Image (cartoon, rainbow, N blue to C red; front, top):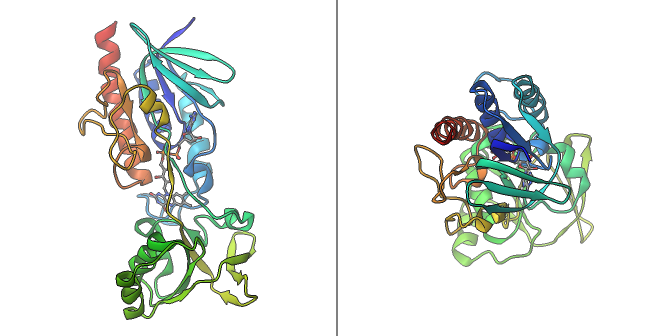
Length: 299
Ligand SMILES: Cc1cc2nc3c(=O)[nH]c(=O)nc-3n(C[C@H](O)[C@H](O)[C@H](O)COP(=O)(O)OP(=O)(O)OC[C@H]3O[C@@H](n4cnc5c(N)ncnc54)[C@H](O)[C@@H]3O)c2cc1C
């Protein structure tokens, strides 16, 4: 069986950047990717240096993969189900295959908890957003609906007051908003709706508003989703004995991106930090530099 220098689990932004750098070192690398990350969902990133008009996740992924493949990086579209440490290597199993490597990079990201309305998907990054740090500026002085649940929704609505004073909060997930938060929402004039959403109104990638279960409608051209309960995809790290932060994100050495398990590295949203494309790229790059040093030590 081929033993790779490194297997990268997750071919999103962090995994791709790492693979490009490892390819430039001429290391033997396999990227295993399930193709269902946040970078597959976001139609436009607005806060990245060099892209003032924005760039889609699909474009970054497509060009990144092409760049990595040209450097000899191998890709398979599979989902890793098990990862374990052997005497001198790691063993990674998908439903279809088993692979081995000397080092591992976990770049599996997180999965957003989105309400089950298909019409929201084409709007993501264009007129429906999930992160105020990324896209608060997109709703500057505009009317915006927050599709939320309890504290997460209320927190999002309050964060957006930095940019807009026309905010409507729908407690679609029906979790409790405590008195303190409710009085802050009132203070900022944020209208709160307790009725759930029956239907999303959208034309292609343009969000138009919502219909509530009581038959009433709310119109706006922008929305934020904040349901809480995103899935942190650190199960494989757990199998390997990797130390996790209390919110399930992976803890790494800030300089090397190596976890507490020798030769297991992590990069991107799965690491405990601010969940941004530029950080995922930086993480991937830095991890690759130190993975290469480890590979060189082993040969
Ligand atoms: C709607 C939306 C808008 C956003 N807007 C912005 C923005 O404007 N600016 C910004 O900086 N960030 C934004 N983000 C966040 C940004 O997309 C993430 O920070 C970035 O994608 C993180 O990269 P990553 O490589 O860590 O994870 P991802 O891009 O999510 O990639 C992880 C990859 O791992 C794969 N994977 C997971 N588990 C397995 C497994 N077991 N086996 C194999 N493969 C697996 C997935 O399929 C996926 O391809 C946005 C996110 C969303 C959803």
